[in-house]
Image (cartoon, rainbow, N blue to C red; front, side, top):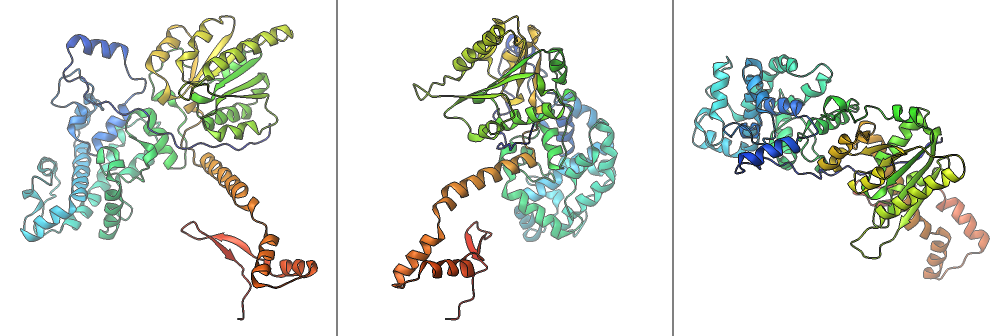
Length: 498
């Protein structure tokens, strides 16, 4: 199979984090929630990171009833809070965040009112100063400037952060975690000023507004939502990829660790893709991965059923002539009603029937969609072995539970393709950009027409031969470049004497 271009925008954080929602619910409702709506992703790693970077106690459920739904595990808080090294790192990070966030107000108090940081309780967490002192860190000193205090945080963190590696499992690359705590050139006032500027420009994009050495993006959403979100993004930012999603999820026995086993047991396979409920870049990523493993030979057809309102990125897959692919585009009778579900079901059954009639039956199917509307298709076709490919953020708990209870194998395509893959997104954007420039700009530009318009405006004449010579000597050597503001500029222009 030849290479093909693929692309996707960064996934939005479609599921907002629900925190402390059960404060006023009765015990019976709390019990039902805990039994039926258990999260699919673990939060052990993010709870440890949240503790160390100084996220407020309230997000761990401290001071709240035990069976509430805090974002992070209280048991992790209690575990780390017993360790001197973890406490030191936590309180240093809390102080740094507060000092960067409230720098101007603290600076005014210290310089105008001659206060030290241990006498500004509204701006500097006094419990952190007290905890550090008890743990042998004499943080408060006389006649110390605020910018020097921030440098002190960096210098104190240097020996203590490495001692916290023991709180994270060995399979996580510690360097990626460690770098979150250290500001580039953090031992200088200038380095900390630079970090403070970046932090305060987009403070809301940092996890719970806690400072870390990070370059946040709006597309990231809450990076500490759960382990399954945090680790892939962390690895991606380090130009790496986190593969083993089974370590961060609580999926049951029906969840496959690798779809290769399914293809090994299958005879002929149809892959049906609900383009309205699947990320094109992830789908193309999984097909490329299957091809790299040499198991796409069993695919009888890849059926793409699309809606006129969905992404144009599917054309990247459609251009590959080596794929047994059919692309079916549905239109809408009503603007608010899609016909993809019905169309895909009908097309699917026709493919199954045609394969039987030809004497070469399809016995296995892969449904790529996080939409539970396809459950009847699975339930009413028991003779077909199904594999459902889902996305973490788009699969509801009820659908996940239905697949699990009926022993239908499923697989999270995020395991093969992480949404933030830099190389694939770069290729996608370049592809779209080149097409936009060529179709909407360059195709409408003809330099010979421009030359003729110039001659007409100047009331001059040239023969066809003169125009061709003029073009070769002066025009063909020029090219178009782009300025930093995105504007187009002519380069290699001939020098003009007059």
